[in-house]
Length: 342
Image 1 (cartoon, rainbow, N blue to C red):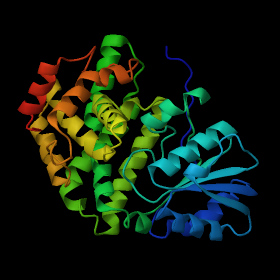
Image 2: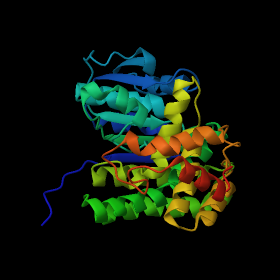
Image 3: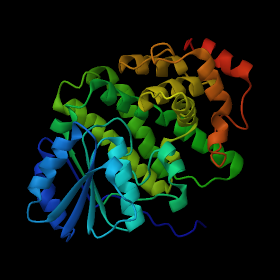
Image 4: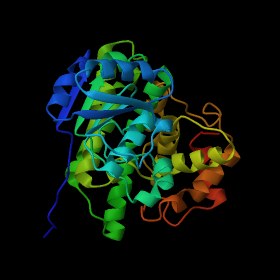
């Protein structure tokens, strides 16, 4: 018999053209008087200012994410307005202060929109606070705003979704070999998001229409709900993400960065090859989405990718995947060559 389960998912999800205008109604339902809005450093600020103006009946303080003092309280509600980093810092602040959270994404490059979890790299830096879990009470996703995000970032969102086919396979593997808890329903939600991305990649890749963004946002929100149900990021993050995190870790040490969703897409091709899946079909979907299908296109060299593959399993030793206890440099290079990434 399974243990008692408990999970939190967003109470309100408002998305579509003009969704930001619904902010006052959503906030009114949460009985908040004093609100902190955490936003990005540049383009997202104007949207945060728009949200603040809509909440003129409340006491509002607007801060960039690099200005936030996590130990300073005094607010009834936390709002994150912006891209991944702004929303993640808002989650950390809400967790530390034990306050409700509302997120207003201005891009859709990752599956953190409706997720209670933060990016791996930030989670490592915030370890002193424990495991950060901050499920949004509400998600307000204005598709007309998200349409204006850089095309490369929106395509990266498709890359995130394509990775779910490997993440779920890794989760099932860990369930069979390690006895890890597994949720069929959460896995189904995650795989449905993958199928949506794979089936629509060529049609939505230019994000020229509001409905293209709508398809992407719906699928990413579905992933966030899957993680809430699972009680971890397991249904949406497996060996493909370990590869991406490993590359990001190496690049950070060199003072460089990359687009996360692009790395996830490449990692998905590699892991599909290791699994003996139809990696060519997955690679075609990556190409149709307008994402890089070689290391060179992603600005990476083979040696760096080999190093990332060799170290990837060490990043999350609690998360068993197809990488097992690690692969050799020879096997890593062969996987890159055979899958046509080099």
